Image 1 (tube, rainbow, N blue to C red):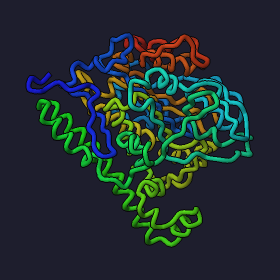
Image 2 (cartoon, one colour):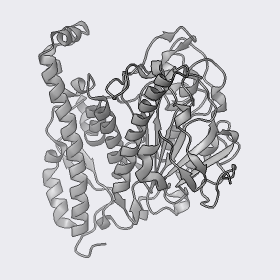
Image 3 (cartoon, helix red, strand yellow):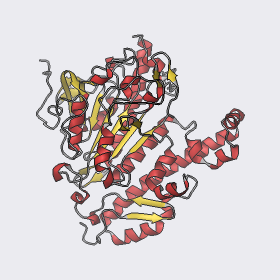
Length: 477
């Protein structure tokens, strides 16, 4: 501890009118171990877990790395992960057995984190078959943080029935289940997600406070007092943290202002607002509502990922999920050079080379966002390591190839070292049909919440903690 600093409670917060701001770990708070929640007390910091879901599968021809074990090369789609290659595991031949039965996409997304089979329905009587990985952890350690878990996305829940397969579209909008019949609602608005971190009390009292002054301005007096109490190293950490919060806040405000200006000059948008029962002046006054309408897609995604990073950094929660889009998402990716059309449509490439190339570019964009989040986490120092070292960040999809709807050999990447419980920097190839739930068993142990069974697991995933393990497929001579 910096000798000039004074003791600060590990749960110290900054307060202002309508604002409560959790703090990152500071030397003045004492040993990192005081935060607890490491497996069997061995971790120096709490372990965090995020699951990022990408809909509609991948271009399988461009996904799998060359080489095995620690001697491997990133595939074309995985190239954005070059700067964090030593921090990831690419896992080949993972399979979610429960998603084999049934047609199309819906039986693959809803059970992605449960490892159980969904019940076919065309109504709201949903049944996923189990509690999801994230919510199981949240139920066990969520009481240690202000927020038990954080669920984010960028698309509204899809309603109605997909008549092609006879499933309610609701299944395509949820990976997080608190009970087998209860999907957890997601926040799709960056402003409201930001408010969940810093304006929780105000939200409970009166709803969104999106139009209020900066959270940093609200806690300015407390921040000055804290700076006077801590040492130089902690002051630098606080400056880094405050800058990150200010950046997110400014970007949210910028997009809301830009949207408002566009709507003011767009008569068609005005008619749409009126048709939906809104009043123009209400939309002008409420940046939160504007920011969910037409915000730049890449920026919206990155804002959400930054909010997860802030939440993990301050131990506001240790569990988060993020959906890049709903399954069967028709999100138009024409903003990418060389891409023309919607995600789902392009994923049904029928092996046409031009469509496969567009598909790959969409997958590459998703990987760039994942790499962005991992890079942010790796840049944040925590004790002798980084925030990424003390986290598990899963990236995956419920099918391998969107054209074939194949649940075999899923595209799965796990980043972070789980507080020292994961040996990263490898491409591990397993026996065909290895249960994805074996990975989840290992992740649960890393989170300090081990179980004897999960979904169709047959045990924990072999070799995930052993750096000498090179996978079951030997490297070709």
